[in-house]
Image (cartoon, rainbow, N blue to C red; front, side, top):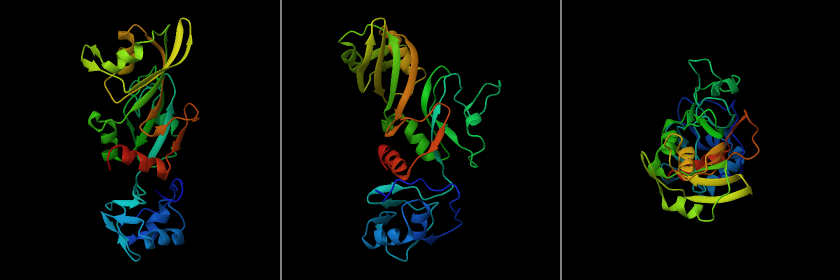
Length: 256
C-alpha cells in the first residue's frame, strides 16, 4: 500500500498530459519524490499492469497505478469524501422543495461537483460517500459487487435469541427475499434494544422494512460503515476527505 495515509492536497496540480511517475505519486500523497523514486526503483509500482521504471511518464487521468499491490487514484480531479448525514436531511445534493440537502454542508469547500453514493432516507443518519468518480460509485452501489453496509439500529425489544439466525436465513418481503450478512445485539434495555446488522442490499428502506417484518420496528437508524470505510468519530454534518489507504480499500472492495 502507499507509504502513508495522507490525503492528497486539494491544491494538488491538475495535469493536462503525461508527467513523470514520481511527481504524480508525490502529488497523490504517497510520499516525497525521493521516497516515490525509491518505491519505483524497488519495483513496488505498476502502471497498467506493468512494473514501472524510473523515468516513466504517465497520464494520471487514464493510468491504472498500483503501489505495493493497492490501487492508487492519481487523478487529482477526482474527489472522495465521507459525510455524517444528520437526521432530517434529504439524500440529494439540492432539493426542489427547499429542504436541507447534502450540498448545504459542503460550504463551497469542494470545487468539483460531487454526487452521493447510495441514499439514506431523511429519518436516517450516518455515513454517506460523496465522489465524482462515477465508475467507483456505480460499483459500490451495485449489489453484484457485494459491498457490505453496516447499520446500528434502535428497535423495539426484547430481542429473541434466534433473531440473528432468522435474518441470516432470509426474510420474504413484498419485493423479494432479503438476508443479512451479520447481526448482533449491542444492548438490550427491556422494551428497547440496539442491534447492529450488515447486508449488501440497496433496496429502498430495506433495513427498516426488514426489521419491521420480524416485529422490531426501527426508531433510530445510523449507517456506520460502507465496505471498509467507517463513520468513526466524524461529527454529525461534517465531511472529511478519504485517505489514500481508504480509497485503495474501496477499489479493493469492488475487485479492482
